[in-house]
Amino acid sequence: MFAKINHVAIVSERYAMLAKFYEALFGMKMSGTKNPARAMTVGDGYVGLNINPRKAGRPAALDHFGIEVEDVETVFGRMRTLYPQAAWVQRPSTRPFAGISAHDPDGNFFDLSQKNMTNRHASYVENDGEQHARCITHVALRTLHPDEMARFYSDVFELTPLNSSTGDPNHYLSDGKMSLIIIPWKIDLYMGQSILPTGLDHIGFTVESLAQFKEDLDEIVGVNPVMNPIPVGLGKEQGKRLDLLKQQCPMGEFFFSDPDYTLIAVRQRQ
Image 1 (cartoon, rainbow, N blue to C red):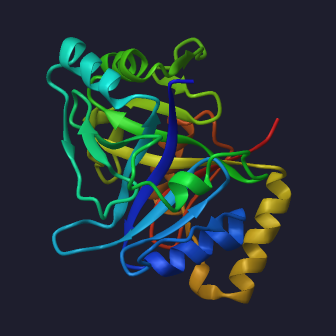
Image 2: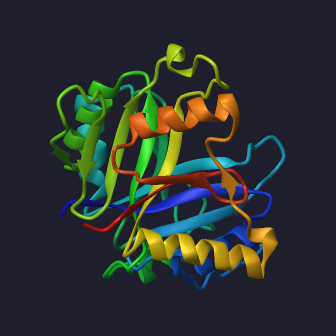
């Protein structure tokens, strides 16, 4: 396996509470970060979830994902040759999850790391094994040119294209455990609801039992109402948003958002 999607990042004003939310509901484990004032990280054994504090001018949102590769020079060579409109920059040594940041030809940015980079710690080295019973299994990206972006992630990172059903406009690529869903972005999809820009759409989790998961969610909120998630689908506008989510994410069976509005799709393990 040349590459793996090894983390997803959220920006939030409530980053410490969100870490506890994902720990309590999904059984994710806290990582030993060197500076907890910088970020909180939790992991599912394979993928890390980095929750970063919000700063001036930066929106609270699902922010980016990270890819770990066997050799970054191979990646650079492929980008130079095949996709010269993509680019990358070296990040400060204080960023344990971002030795390099890059963007695809549509401007969607991601972190890039190599296994032997010296600044790797926390979730980079702690999530390198088997996934927990409840784990992140996909991240979804809205983009203007989905066909070209699917080729980019396949050509550059050797992610494997997965078959989709007839008439499904999405692309699905996998590293063997974690999938990237590439969703076409068109403004007319958002008729009757708030228009979302291109960028990351939602995180997808797989759980051992959807019924048990919903029971646990109710129990957690009963114990700690601060962890109350945000429902999706209430009212006409949110009803249209839920309809679109179901249309664009056939991997999801239950949709809601975390307490800071990051969309989550959950399905039961088959």
